[in-house]
Length: 279
Length: 295
Image (tube, rainbow over all chains, first blue to last red):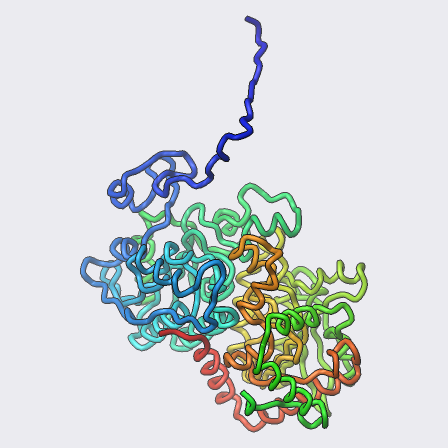
């Protein structure tokens, strides 16, 4: 036959809507699928296309910190429910569920550790705990990490992954912006550096506070780094978005980042920086 | 709740008593309707904006334009003027009155350049020991492609950081909408006030409803749940005092509203005058470090 081709698309009126939600271990970029242990062994990076999956806080700490060096601080700090907030479900129930599903007390893990023998204070966020959102407990733990870094006079390495402030705590979650900013200012006054690693996603309230204040700021490839995410920008302004809107690559081009560093290279990168800051 | 602290602006007779009555009534039954009424009044088309107040409160106002880098953002006005006999620096969001001005000023939603301009004025205030007055009235920082490319998140973070470093007295008042990061960017102040019918929130009621209820039409429910009204903000320790408005709201009488606001600003600055610069900064940081709850 000649080069005539007929595309036939049959629309079933009662066909189930295509599910957008893919399995968490399926790469959203290339569709490769991994077992849990495969993904963990590969630092949660797609071996096929290099896509960086979200990384659990403790897995990240195990990767960045020297073996056995991490001592967690402030494990007892939990969120409170100041507004007795209730949307479709009570906030208290969402918190309990997040703790059960993630095994974490909150969306941030802090503690002391060493990275390639350089003593540091670590603050690592985990997106799987209510989207890494920042409420009073996250703000408090980050501030304590700043205090501990200043007290021990060791650099603070802060890994961010957050959708923003935790709406369920209302205006008090917005107040975590100034709270964490003030903590970083105290840290800077103590002459202690902060190195920020932005993971996917670092957005809204966390980007508009402590995440943006690193002395050196790097990001993971493909991470969304935006104050307002693409969906909301599109809906509000009807603007046509560039393909790499809000991604780490665009942020680097516009001067908001020092570097994009793949996960596998971050330990070496941090080690080199820490050596330089130690003079 | 009847013995609420620090109702400033009490110099103007009558209004404070009226506000106290109203607070008593609210505390008895702070209904969803009451909260939604605040949302509507805070956004009222006739509500006085920053420049309306500046014209009534300050003498010798000189507006200063531009961030010295890229642009002059009309959504955030800055300048210096005399308040009660002394020079102060002022930063304030400015919505527009008619459609053209609204578009020119992006409905009071600032770009990173706006916060850059604000930081320039903060530095100026610090250099010459002018107290800094912030008037907050924004739905939020501008959500657009260029705003993101120019670093909206970083600008908001650095604006707060700059305020945390100042050695001069700083007072902020939410005079309409205190919308999220775009608002707090200029409100890391020694004293934070709110007008009676202003709102201060982490997200707009519509935005919250769209995310948590998956329906922007549930804005009233969302507002009732996250309580952005002045009374709740005072209760939660987010603000230091409520500034009364004329009967029916600030939109009813701009002159009276300005008089009440001026009294509150002057009184707050007088209190801060007594504190040494280093101590002032230490106290400011300590205050924000204490915000939020956890178990």
